[in-house]
Length: 100
Image (cartoon, rainbow, N blue to C red; front, side):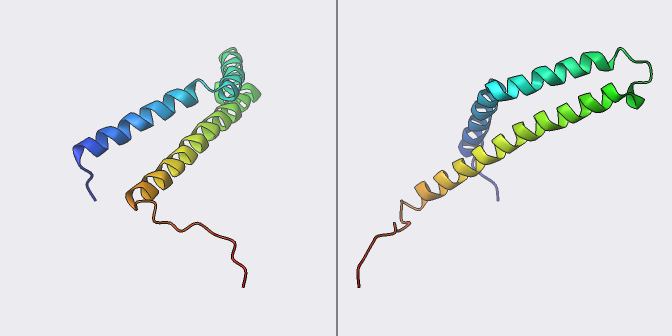
């Protein structure tokens, strides 16, 4: 399915906005700080891939990327649901309490 150019630009703009917001997230910044520290220690060793520091850096990097990807996914899911509801004209019935 090909989206019209205006929709592709709108989707890209939203992705850029969400990515920028996630980049400045305090929790992710803290995790990245730890990743950066582990990365600096990493290059102090000679055989980088065989050092515990490399394993530490790799683990922290994987965690930070996981957090970032999870947040991007969840925001995309919320945006997709919101777009779907908007396109359907809010035709999703709300649950109401009825007594028999």
